[in-house]
Image (cartoon, rainbow, N blue to C red; front, side, top):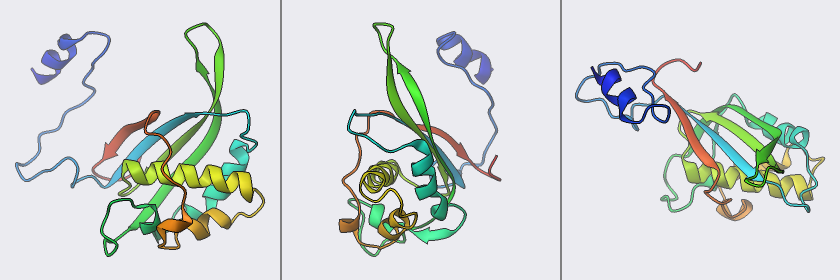
Length: 173
């Protein structure tokens, strides 16, 4: 019944893929074991880095629980910022324009056990900064985002283009 109701609300625009009964104590945000984000950012002509360079910068961050409190904005300094980034990948894409043209962009896919949107925006902005200023230093991004000092990271990238894609309540897909 729930599937029929949701799928008929806006056919072709809104679709329920699955539903699972949960207890009343379940909280969608606080019960999630992991979150996946997709970020699409148009590139400027002054952006000289590549997806490969970004992936090299991201590589040391993947697979370990690290303190990302430097990425936090508006959070208490004593807040636990330990997170495990399970996957991050940059790829060059083209964004379709209304006039039929295409705009070069960077797609960043991030999967972590507790990242918030602003942390992703700050991570990506800092990665872009490091890729421009220290493209050959594979530890530069790691050093900045695990420093526990917000001053070591860039101001958050724009919210436009960041999409919360999925939350998981068990093993990572």
